Structures are given as C-alpha cells and as structure tokens.
Length: 226
Image (cartoon, rainbow, N blue to C red; front, side, top):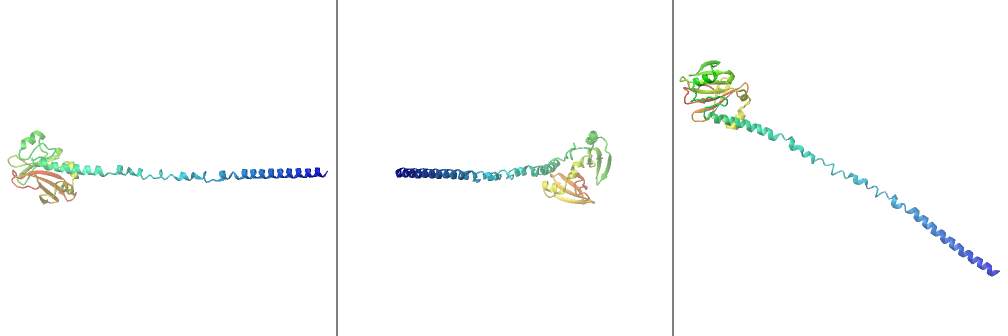
C-alpha cells in the first residue's frame, strides 16, 4: 500500500511539473504574440510622408522668370533710332546732288519751266532777297529761282519732317557747319558739297524741324535766309 501511495505521489509530481512547463510555454507564446505589434506600431516608416515636402524642386519658378528677355523692348527702340538716323544721313547724300527726297527737281540743273510743266502754276510766288520763291502747297514744297530762272533753293515742309529734333540731327550728322537766326527760326546749316548746303529750320516755338532746304551757294546771287 505504501508503494502505491509513493507511485501516486510521483505521478502527481510529474503531472504537476508537466502542467507547470506547459503553462510557462503558453505565457511566453502569448507574451511574444502581444509584443510583436511593435514593428507595426512603429509609425516612423509610415511617417515618411515628410518626403512630400520635396516640393522644393517644383517650387523653383525662378526658371520660368527667364521670360524677362521677351519683355525687353530694347531691340525695337534701337531700330527706330537707327532708322531716323539713316533718313537724316540720306538727306545729306541727296543734298550733295542738289536734291530733296520727294521732289523731282535739282538745284543748279533745274529750271522754272521744268517745274511749271510738271506741277503747273504755283499757288503763290514772292520775292525773297534777289530770288523768287514759288509755293506748291499740295507738294509741300517751295522752289527758289534766280533771275536766270535757274533753281537755286529747294525747300520741303513734308509733315514727316516735323518730328525731327536738333538732337536727332546732331546724332546723325554731328554739329552743324554754321548756325543762323531769322526771327523765331534757328537755321542749322550743314555743308553737303562745295556747292550745296543742307539746312534744317527749327522754330523756337516747337523745337522741331519746320522745313529743310537744299541751297545752291554758287548760282544764288546772295545767301538768302532759309
């Protein structure tokens, strides 16, 4: 009987030990299961949306600001100034032959009859100095003749001339050879050749060209006012 009790006690101890071991392993498993969420609970990887702040490359519109060159109006104003300068230089070139742009006659070689045949009778004729000046209003021109009916002065008051200033003239041709004053008008004289002068007549009241004159210094009896 004692032997039976001993065996029972041993079995009980073994069973208790086994139960205790099973309980320990189960608690360890449950502990490991509850701690595993730590990787998923670490929001640091998912918190990497901070990378969306990499908007800095797109936020550099300074490149599009390179549109500034298109707003540069510098090439158009420079062309206009150069065009005006060329027109004034062309006036001096024509004056070397006694001519004015838009008028088909030349000082020295032209005669009164040439003008009458081409343009008809003048609107008015008047004496100035020792010459006679015929006005052709529709042609924006005044033609001066000497006593031999030879053209000695061709004047143009074409409206296109009325925008010219002394500054533009000097920029194209430099300083005038001579300057004279006739009442309110200042006459700026440029030597085109040994025979001809190019004159710009500018009233003080406007500060801009009223008319130009190509004057024959040889075949005129005296230097009449521009």
